[in-house]
Length: 422
Image 1 (cartoon, rainbow, N blue to C red):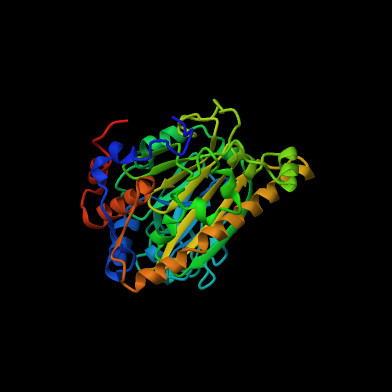
Image 2 (spheres, rainbow, N blue to C red):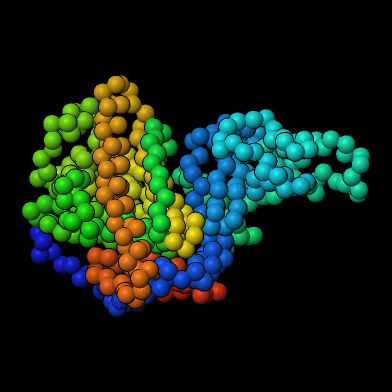
């Protein structure tokens, strides 16, 4: 199904997902410190969490450290000599010092700088100075503390639950099956942006999982590529809600007229504006979960991977967004954009041009985040009024709430998206 005019049916999603309802959504979860503590303990501590891409950790001994403030943990992921990825708490089990203070690197072994305990990348304890002075000591009892880890399509996930509530494959479900085969591993040229907002993580995530804001927020920038005379309000091509995850497939304006600089970027490689502006032939080589309607006027897909990561997929590039809670009213937002490596200076220019256009678009989105949180904190608005095209936002609050209050959140999430018909 594709959107031809602004008169296209715009109330179809509440018919497809009637169990989500149509009423206002409480704003309290974006403000309540007690609710945030429940999110930390019952959501983030129980589900799979994104760590990063596997390509930088391809060689034995390579490692990276990531801080999960929301879980009060720092995670070390390393490639062991047997080729497997391992995840550990970044802590020496002797006296608790950080094992490494580097964000990334490569080594044959990790040595604690406090007392010299040495560990293999597989987490086993290799050497202990003055070992004979310890009491009833067995090295096998003092390896690094492991964390569950798994990899899907080159994306590394970890879970603090022991054992995890689901396997990673079960967690990703049909959404993950639909995305298998997208050439993520071919896109290793990357650009990174980050910012910290004084806002709840859900308020920040909300700004990026609907197209309703495009007409206003992006009217002078990339918004011209995803709306046009035949679709002034950027109505979506499709929205698919899975028990935990969601996909929002965006319209691309085939009548978009690029600027001279954009034309130069188009000439020498795929550009984000070129991709956002629809009209290209649908790529049948893409997996079924990408551009699911196979519309020619497609721009890109927003894939929200529960709880707090977005994978935005285009034909020829993709970017990830992470929304990590720091406090009930503070969030760290990181964006990583990925392309195939350039084969010429002209292609490199095209990559940089796309990275700048994305940066500017995200800055526009970011301009609304703290003002929303500030206004909500005045307690004058108790509920959020959502229209049909914002159903992904509605779904997001519902699933978070199931994890906060339900002992079987996945079953409750399945029920939330059942009922209706396509």
